[in-house]
Image (cartoon, rainbow, N blue to C red; front, side):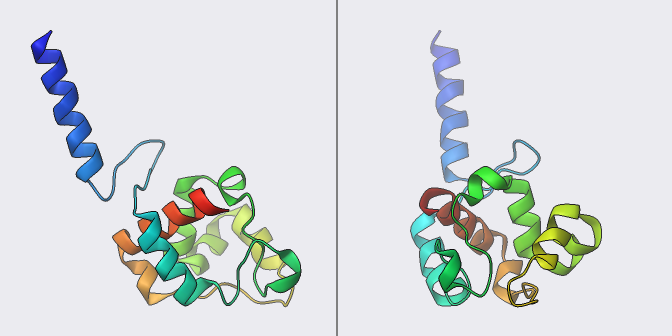
Length: 124
């Protein structure tokens, strides 16, 4: 019994300390407060939870509409996603101002991207 508890404790500790964990294709574990800072600095200009006040689509309910793996791939490289994913093509084709999301250099950082996804999933 002690061995099982120790194994569980070890696995739990590794999961909590790891900035990127894998499950359901890619499950990104990030810091939502750090993600909010990045979002407010870069994303808030185009995205909110109010469809009428944005250039890009509203992010309300984004965690229900998109998987973590999809968000991860989209934020890393929107152009690549548009080439191979029908949902990504629809996002581009239904853009209010006929604009596509740019590939942002900061989203190439796995930890920053994980933080933004954590913020999106907890706030929208």
